[in-house]
Length: 338
Ligand SMILES: Nc1ncnc2c1ncn2[C@@H]1O[C@H](COP(=O)(O)OP(=O)(O)O)[C@@H](O)[C@H]1O
Ligand SMILES: [Mg+2]
Image (tube, rainbow, N blue to C red; front, side):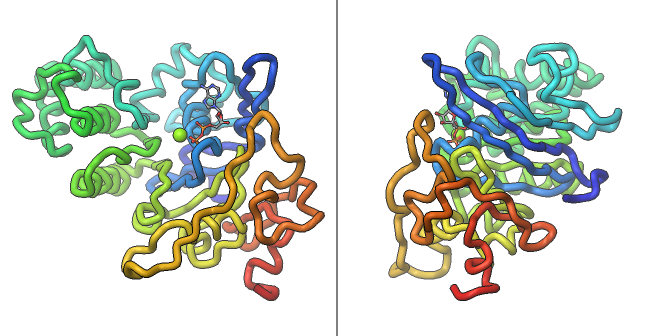
């Protein structure tokens, strides 16, 4: 794919399965991608497609009933390659990496904030654990971070407990915590869904700054195509445990090949196209993950499906960076009749 020097994390053939009531949900069924240094990879797809499980697999924060069945997740750190998939979930090495070198912003801030400690204490603990900053410097840094996150009266707010913060403020406090150690990789799972647009823009600006100034590689999970168009360098489209299409942002947005990518793009309003756009919801819904169709997972909902789609298509490269899993990629990629 790319020169490994530019890659912060490479994921290859990742399979993560859930086991509940003696049944197996192949939540990730062979997923490969790179998070590149100083670039933003956006992961898009409907709910239930495996985006959060991908993030949790990298962070080794999977629920107990799930496990990485196959594949690898390699973190290309300054001290050499680290196989994250093989590390003990709560072992020393993983705890060293998690939070400081690979940080995560969750959908729900209360999964990251501890209700019994002040927000400032939590940011400072992270700094003390992972850096050799003095108590005083850590306090200053915590205030700076809260200020950057647009939290009013940061000198006072730093001592407040999470329940004194509004939902939006908690979200921002958690983002401050994630950014505190200038991580090499930042994984953000729909980080701004609950926030108003002004704050959202500030947060994206800060993520961009982290990327520019520290070469942080960002994996951003979002369902907002506007965000993708603005922030992504690369895009991966997920559907039912597979990356069905991936490429540079230009390749995927300008020449979407997979019918699922096309349907996703047609289902959202495009900024600047006015009020009378033809927005088409994707027909049908995602299949039951415990009772999946045999071949292409999207076939039942696809306008282009043929008998061939009863079998799973292989991944094909359209360019060295643009790849797709669809039997009809040739016709659809603009080389054949549209
Ligand atoms: N804690 C869990 N227990 C059981 N199944 C789960 C759990 N978390 C996710 N899954 C399953 O894994 C699949 C992928 O889910 P997820 O990654 O959360 O989707 P999304 O793309 O919306 O983030 C779904 O089929 C979901 O039901
Ligand atoms: Mg999710």
